[in-house]
Image (cartoon, rainbow, N blue to C red; front, side):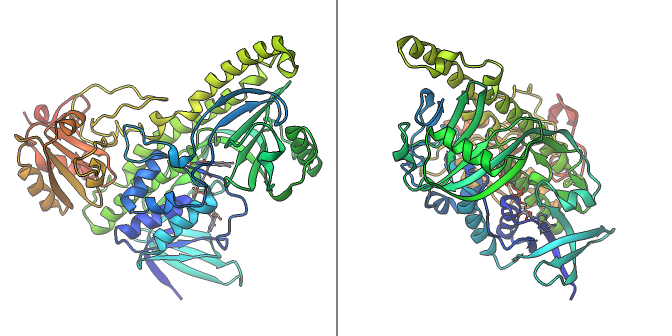
Length: 553
Ligand SMILES: Cc1cc2nc3c(=O)[nH]c(=O)nc-3n(C[C@H](O)[C@H](O)[C@H](O)COP(=O)(O)OP(=O)(O)OC[C@H]3O[C@@H](n4cnc5c(N)ncnc54)[C@H](O)[C@@H]3O)c2cc1C
């Protein structure tokens, strides 16, 4: 039987689920196919970043994330050590997730919720919409991109039965070995192998009682050779993930290697049950193109990075949010020819920046291999204590780049996007550890707490939002009329708070459906139709450095 859908998404990992959910939330029908039965053998991601939490907020699912069964009081410390029963070199202290506060720039905070808790939340959200159909055990085999539709051949992985699906758009959220990317002939560039690693998920009921480091989220082990192993608390209970960090040389860690690593980490034999083993390669790769026409890729299909920085899934969910409203606009007819093309222009530079930052973080974690610990680090005694403290302080400071990354999680911007109307102000520097809010076109629209306890972020959603800020703000009528003429969904919100005016910097600010600023000015645009046509991808934007007033004159 032939079935047609506006959007066919391949891959129900977190990115495919998020895209299906965003489309469902917009009322856009889609079919999501997944080759497995949805079971997660070994959770990979466990940090839901602050921006992803802001998306969860707009989708109305933050309570479900908060209530996920990762215990709120489980300390999130990162500990640098010679062994669980050896010496502690340093510790970055973090409270349990229930006690961490939101950063001043956001109404949300990051959350420790591993993939086997987070995917089901996204799945429940997506499948809660009647217009979303999720089909497990259905694999994409091949596709053909035609002028007015994509034809996909899919296989039932239980019976082997083959059938055809057609779609207006095909999105590959099918992970690192993406069939869609391969079928579209898109190469990836970068470094294919940073290290060959082995992750081991194991159960140990009384793990904290077996050593003297206390409860912590992450242990990073440093031996005479430098950093060699990490162990993280996967569910804040009885499950842990050991990762043999590896090297760029291809190795296949054996069962004996795994047993020896666990014994070395603990400093003695102990009882554990191995639940799964995942041998994987840490990569730094970005797709040369993100698709075009009717076929696009998102998430790990488009970018692969070291998990040092928790940017992998979080970058992918940003892709999904960038794509969601553009697909809706294209299907509804108000999206111009450049709108879907802008997906690559906006998102690929973010991926390039994030994969590089993740590799830099890996370099910091492995910097102990170049600056090896002096032998005293492993010896008892007061003289050794002093040397240990010095070495530990250096490493603790080095690792801070990885723990504090809001310049990446919140500070990504679409400065050069063809669908953003520049305001003539200079481009601010991109930040790394810190994040300064700006409402410059292309940036994430700033969070300001409103008197009723909500956030300015709560004002943005399915369509465009025109903010009128301050008592003397222009009416915005010209912009509204231009939007209505082009069929662009828009609403006006008037705000009076001086803090909002300060954060947004102008009296009229146009915010896109994904919460990024598209345009701002202190007066009505002289060419409202040109602004609307630019932000909906129907017209080239003016050159950088020229305000819309200059363009009009
Ligand atoms: C150890 C580790 C820790 C990590 N920690 C974090 C973290 O804390 N935070 C973070 O943001 N990221 C983290 N990441 C990265 C993160 O896990 C990935 O970026 C994320 O899973 C990518 O999601 P995705 O949906 O794009 O792809 P995937 O999760 O790979 O999902 C792709 C899906 O597509 C399906 N599929 C593939 N081919 C087909 C086909 N032909 N037909 C149908 N279905 C198909 C697959 O079965 C799979 O379910 C970590 C990664 C690792 C390895």
